[in-house]
Image (cartoon, rainbow, N blue to C red; front, side, top):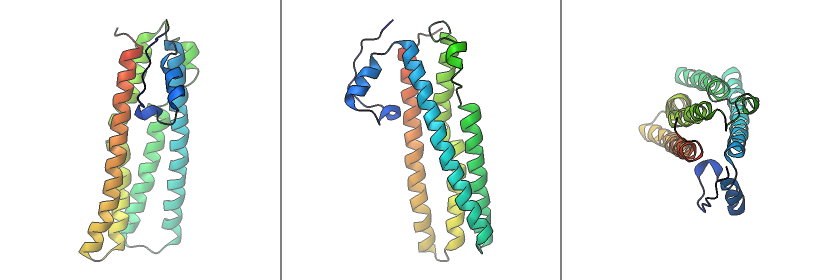
Length: 189
Protein backbone atom coordinates (compact mmCIF):
# COMPACT_ATOMS: atom_id res chain seq x y z
CA UNK A 1 0.00 0.00 0.00
CA UNK A 2 1.53 3.32 -1.07
CA UNK A 3 0.55 6.54 0.64
CA UNK A 4 0.20 9.30 -1.98
CA UNK A 5 -0.08 12.18 0.47
CA UNK A 6 2.35 14.97 -0.29
CA UNK A 7 3.16 17.38 2.50
CA UNK A 8 5.36 20.44 1.97
CA UNK A 9 6.04 21.21 5.63
CA UNK A 10 9.23 20.21 7.39
CA UNK A 11 8.78 18.11 10.45
CA UNK A 12 11.27 18.38 13.36
CA UNK A 13 12.62 14.86 12.90
CA UNK A 14 13.28 15.39 9.20
CA UNK A 15 14.55 18.97 8.99
CA UNK A 16 17.80 18.03 7.23
CA UNK A 17 16.05 16.86 4.06
CA UNK A 18 15.29 19.08 1.11
CA UNK A 19 11.68 19.69 0.04
CA UNK A 20 12.06 17.12 -2.78
CA UNK A 21 13.43 14.52 -0.36
CA UNK A 22 10.51 15.18 2.01
CA UNK A 23 8.07 14.63 -0.87
CA UNK A 24 9.79 11.36 -1.79
CA UNK A 25 9.73 10.33 1.88
CA UNK A 26 6.02 11.03 2.19
CA UNK A 27 5.19 8.74 -0.77
CA UNK A 28 7.05 5.67 0.57
CA UNK A 29 5.07 2.62 1.61
CA UNK A 30 4.73 1.72 5.27
CA UNK A 31 7.61 -0.79 5.30
CA UNK A 32 9.97 1.71 3.68
CA UNK A 33 8.86 4.48 6.04
CA UNK A 34 9.56 2.29 9.07
CA UNK A 35 12.94 1.27 7.61
CA UNK A 36 13.82 4.94 7.10
CA UNK A 37 12.67 5.70 10.64
CA UNK A 38 14.91 2.93 12.04
CA UNK A 39 17.81 4.39 10.06
CA UNK A 40 17.06 7.85 11.49
CA UNK A 41 16.95 6.45 15.04
CA UNK A 42 20.29 4.73 14.52
CA UNK A 43 21.84 7.96 13.25
CA UNK A 44 20.50 9.82 16.27
CA UNK A 45 21.89 7.17 18.60
CA UNK A 46 25.32 7.46 17.01
CA UNK A 47 25.29 11.28 17.31
CA UNK A 48 24.20 11.03 20.93
CA UNK A 49 26.98 8.54 21.64
CA UNK A 50 29.59 10.88 20.16
CA UNK A 51 28.22 13.74 22.27
CA UNK A 52 28.22 11.55 25.40
CA UNK A 53 31.82 10.51 24.84
CA UNK A 54 32.86 14.12 24.30
CA UNK A 55 31.08 15.22 27.48
CA UNK A 56 32.65 12.44 29.53
CA UNK A 57 36.07 13.29 28.08
CA UNK A 58 35.75 17.04 28.67
CA UNK A 59 34.30 16.89 32.17
CA UNK A 60 36.51 13.95 33.14
CA UNK A 61 39.65 15.78 32.04
CA UNK A 62 38.55 18.90 33.89
CA UNK A 63 37.88 16.84 36.98
CA UNK A 64 41.27 15.14 36.90
CA UNK A 65 43.42 18.07 35.80
CA UNK A 66 41.86 21.07 37.51
CA UNK A 67 41.58 22.52 40.97
CA UNK A 68 37.86 23.10 41.52
CA UNK A 69 35.50 24.14 44.28
CA UNK A 70 33.27 21.53 45.87
CA UNK A 71 30.32 22.64 43.72
CA UNK A 72 32.51 22.42 40.63
CA UNK A 73 33.52 18.84 41.45
CA UNK A 74 29.93 17.83 42.24
CA UNK A 75 28.72 19.49 39.02
CA UNK A 76 31.27 17.60 36.92
CA UNK A 77 30.38 14.30 38.58
CA UNK A 78 26.66 14.98 37.98
CA UNK A 79 27.34 15.89 34.32
CA UNK A 80 29.43 12.74 33.77
CA UNK A 81 26.77 10.59 35.44
CA UNK A 82 24.08 12.26 33.31
CA UNK A 83 26.11 11.56 30.16
CA UNK A 84 26.41 7.89 31.12
CA UNK A 85 22.65 7.70 31.78
CA UNK A 86 21.98 9.35 28.40
CA UNK A 87 24.12 6.69 26.73
CA UNK A 88 22.29 3.86 28.47
CA UNK A 89 18.84 5.26 27.66
CA UNK A 90 19.83 5.93 24.05
CA UNK A 91 21.20 2.43 23.40
CA UNK A 92 18.87 0.56 25.76
CA UNK A 93 15.41 2.08 25.88
CA UNK A 94 15.45 3.97 22.56
CA UNK A 95 17.54 1.61 20.44
CA UNK A 96 15.84 -0.25 17.58
CA UNK A 97 18.01 -3.02 16.14
CA UNK A 98 18.01 -3.10 12.35
CA UNK A 99 17.33 -6.83 12.53
CA UNK A 100 13.81 -6.10 13.83
CA UNK A 101 12.81 -5.10 10.30
CA UNK A 102 13.30 -8.72 9.23
CA UNK A 103 12.04 -10.27 12.48
CA UNK A 104 8.90 -8.14 12.57
CA UNK A 105 7.93 -7.03 9.05
CA UNK A 106 5.96 -3.79 9.49
CA UNK A 107 3.07 -4.84 7.26
CA UNK A 108 2.56 -8.03 9.36
CA UNK A 109 3.41 -6.66 12.83
CA UNK A 110 1.64 -3.32 13.03
CA UNK A 111 1.21 -3.58 16.82
CA UNK A 112 4.92 -4.11 17.38
CA UNK A 113 5.86 -1.05 15.35
CA UNK A 114 3.13 1.09 16.96
CA UNK A 115 4.67 0.21 20.33
CA UNK A 116 8.17 0.99 19.03
CA UNK A 117 7.14 4.40 17.71
CA UNK A 118 5.21 5.11 20.91
CA UNK A 119 8.33 4.27 22.93
CA UNK A 120 10.40 6.63 20.77
CA UNK A 121 7.82 9.42 21.11
CA UNK A 122 7.52 9.06 24.88
CA UNK A 123 11.27 8.82 25.29
CA UNK A 124 11.73 12.10 23.46
CA UNK A 125 8.82 13.78 25.22
CA UNK A 126 10.34 12.81 28.58
CA UNK A 127 13.88 13.82 27.52
CA UNK A 128 13.63 16.82 29.82
CA UNK A 129 13.64 14.36 32.71
CA UNK A 130 16.42 11.93 31.72
CA UNK A 131 18.46 14.17 29.39
CA UNK A 132 18.04 17.88 29.96
CA UNK A 133 17.50 18.10 33.73
CA UNK A 134 20.45 15.98 34.92
CA UNK A 135 22.94 17.26 32.34
CA UNK A 136 22.11 20.91 32.81
CA UNK A 137 21.90 20.54 36.59
CA UNK A 138 25.55 19.46 36.49
CA UNK A 139 26.47 22.35 34.22
CA UNK A 140 24.68 24.85 36.48
CA UNK A 141 26.55 23.45 39.51
CA UNK A 142 29.83 23.90 37.63
CA UNK A 143 28.96 27.53 36.90
CA UNK A 144 27.85 28.13 40.48
CA UNK A 145 31.21 26.82 41.67
CA UNK A 146 33.03 29.36 39.46
CA UNK A 147 31.20 32.59 40.32
CA UNK A 148 31.25 34.61 43.50
CA UNK A 149 28.79 37.41 42.77
CA UNK A 150 25.02 37.22 42.49
CA UNK A 151 25.05 38.91 39.05
CA UNK A 152 27.63 36.42 37.80
CA UNK A 153 25.59 33.55 39.21
CA UNK A 154 22.39 34.72 37.53
CA UNK A 155 24.14 35.17 34.18
CA UNK A 156 25.81 31.78 34.54
CA UNK A 157 22.49 30.07 35.16
CA UNK A 158 20.55 31.96 32.45
CA UNK A 159 22.53 30.59 29.48
CA UNK A 160 22.29 26.87 30.42
CA UNK A 161 18.63 27.34 31.36
CA UNK A 162 17.90 28.89 27.97
CA UNK A 163 19.72 26.05 26.18
CA UNK A 164 17.91 23.45 28.30
CA UNK A 165 14.55 24.99 27.41
CA UNK A 166 15.38 24.90 23.69
CA UNK A 167 16.59 21.29 23.81
CA UNK A 168 13.54 20.26 25.85
CA UNK A 169 11.21 21.97 23.38
CA UNK A 170 12.93 20.36 20.37
CA UNK A 171 12.61 16.90 21.92
CA UNK A 172 8.94 17.45 22.81
CA UNK A 173 8.29 18.62 19.24
CA UNK A 174 10.09 15.60 17.77
CA UNK A 175 8.05 13.30 20.06
CA UNK A 176 4.79 14.85 18.84
CA UNK A 177 5.98 14.45 15.25
CA UNK A 178 6.70 10.77 15.81
CA UNK A 179 3.24 10.27 17.31
CA UNK A 180 1.67 11.94 14.27
CA UNK A 181 3.74 9.75 11.94
CA UNK A 182 2.76 6.65 13.91
CA UNK A 183 -0.92 7.47 13.63
CA UNK A 184 -0.57 8.24 9.91
CA UNK A 185 1.55 5.18 9.00
CA UNK A 186 0.10 2.50 11.25
CA UNK A 187 -3.60 1.85 11.80
CA UNK A 188 -4.71 1.35 15.43
CA UNK A 189 -4.90 -2.23 16.65
